[in-house]
Amino acid sequence: MMISGRLLAVMRKEFIHIIRDPRSLVLIFLWPVIMVLLYGTAITFDIKEIRIGVLDFDHSRVSRELLRDLTASDYFRISGYLDKRSEIDDGFLKGRFTAVLVIPAGFEKQKALNTGRIQLIVDGSNSNTATVVIQYFKSFCMLHQWESGVAVSAPLSLHPRVWYNPDLKSAHFIVPGLIAVILMMICAQLTSITLAREWETGTFEQILVSPVLPHEIILGKLAPYLLLSLSVSVVTLAFSVAVFKVPFRGSLLLLLVLSIVYIYASLSIGVLISTRARTQQVALLASQILTLLPSFLLSGFIFPVLYMPLVLKAVTYLVPARYYLVIIRGIMLKGVGPGDLAQPCLLLVLFGTFLIAFSIHRFKTVLEKAPWAG
Amino acid sequence: MSPPAGRLQGGYSVVVEDLSRSFGDFCAVDRISFQVKDGEIFGFLGANGAGKTTTIRMLCGLILPTSGRGLVEGLDIGKEAEEIRKIIGYMSQKFSLYEDLTVSENLEFFGGLYGLSHAQVTRKVKESATAADLEAFSGRRTREIPLGLKQRLALTCAVMHNPHVLFLDEPTAGVDPISRRDFWALIHELASGGTTVFVTTHYMDEAEYCNRLAVMHKGRIAASGSPKSLKNRYQKGSIEEMFIGLVGRERTADDD
Image (cartoon, rainbow over all chains, first blue to last red; front, side, top):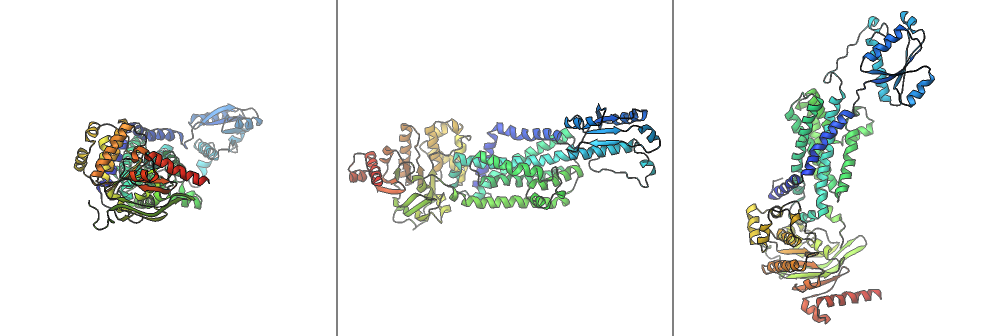
């Protein structure tokens, strides 16, 4: 495809539209930053200060020691003392605590004989939190030697080392993913709205009676938004690294190049929408439906694609964010090089090019189907 | 750009034969036939919904006919729409300008769509009859300029590439009488320069400015000829009386 004067005219005009609308421009840059700030803080799997109710039937020196050790960590906080078992249910219903620690009478004596038993009752209505609470409590017992004997008599001992995110901070995992999600949403909206607006004002018709070709319209509109979205991604990236201290181990250049590919694929979703949507409202709604949920749920952003049911796993191949997540997490957290990212990159190029080609084809026949009033 | 040699059919710029277009069950244009001579101002007169806009859209290649044939400068509207686009100009009643662009940016953009360079656009604007106004407002956003000037700007954009045929779809809708008169002066100037002008309108006084007229009613051509011959044929003093007589008579016929 040759770069014609017509293509340049469309590009230039589109660029003017962007800079003539400073309010939208501010919004386009501010929105991702706010999203990263909000979601980066809100979406966390790090559970701290688990509220524990205590039902201590022993009231001994040892039971007090146990409780002291428990509250010494950041992970547990005693939110109330109970007197009888019947109070447990009520406390769960009122949400006063997530788990109850029951220390039976005679615990001190049994502990001395290495047969001490305590019980942890966990509110399982949020299974995720419940699992984490149980894990934390087990580690706590091991660490403080409350689970007797394990550290001493185990035939083998396990020393886990976590790589790439040694503190297991959720933010390091979530924030790069958020950038992927936000970019996909913004890109789809930008292109779908710009074309729908021209349908609304009737300027599209004016363009279509000129010799300009469908690919010149589409590529001419794509180029300025590619540039705009790339700057948005750079700003959001810089903000994320600065505020959430997300490590950046790989090559910035590589990430930028692959971001362009991802933006291209995401913009093409908006182009496809605009071959149908005739008003900005419809375009906005369609782009939100097509990008928000898929990028959140079917990209691996929160739920790993690897463990999805087969049908959903198949659908994830149609979500560009899926590929970009591999790219951005790989480069930022692990410092992955270009060789290992060739496949997601190639699939993004294919995705975008297929949608663009399909849209160009649709544009050729689209007018024919539009019912005009006589 | 000159018309492809030998393709013009006996001095006719637009030739339409049995052209129809339906939308579902509704027949917007029903087997119409007419010819527009090279360099004349041809008016399409009719009420809203008579099928004027559908006809113009078919001739511009924006929609395909359901049946029948149409030639613009000898090019088939069904098969050679891409070629037609290079030699026609089109202006719709919405004016279709970019309101957030300045006057000169609009001119540059539409010139660019036809492959004109910056210098060519500047020269073309200087030559145009509205040059003084366009230059005075060149740096202003289009949404801020008076409606009459907007209309003349839209026309200048539509003729930037010296089209052989200019299609105007109710170009004066909603514009004050003085601006309408100025606008028609521009149309006459274009026609005297050799451009064929095809214009739809529902203003009866504007119909008098045309060399020839076709009166459209319910998707069909009810009558055609020069304004003078039409008035003579129906023995009316004005086009308005002729139109009401013609359309009113058909209505009574329908009721029977």
